[in-house]
Image (cartoon, rainbow, N blue to C red; front, side, top):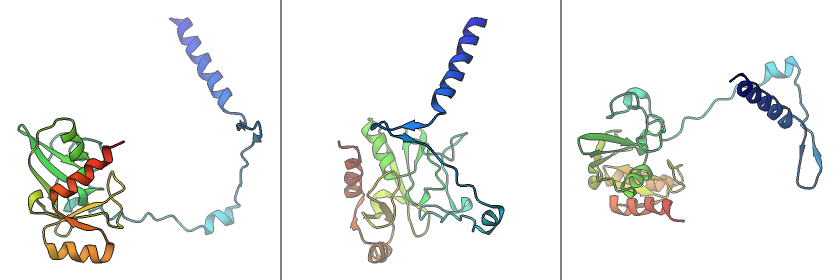
Length: 189
């Protein structure tokens, strides 16, 4: 037992020392990382980095989360934070259990694995309330970043809201089935 522990520790140290030296690229050129230390004055005058809030994100008190337990805050498929990606959130029932997804992509992934989902709903991007997917107008392919996909999909209860979003951000307005077909393209190779 002590021998295994010693061998494990030795391998760990050897691995650390092997990875800590200069890097050599395919052309056998030595690459050395140099440190660019800043003076305290340079450090003190640097502006703090402020992250811009993502379009999909809402304040936690405005998000409706339907799952229970320790995973309530996370997508049932990919584990992403549902508050951060709330405006693309979908919910559905499977058996007696409610599932919440960060995106149509993850709902489509569950369906692709043979999941039978009932009563699917989507967040209305304007009101932040869940609406039946069959009542939604999806704006697909706008210039607003999507969730889990390169082709964004935002849902609206009102056709006028969808048209206003489309006028500002582009994209194509379609129903749930059209948006779902677009989401399925994410899985084609």
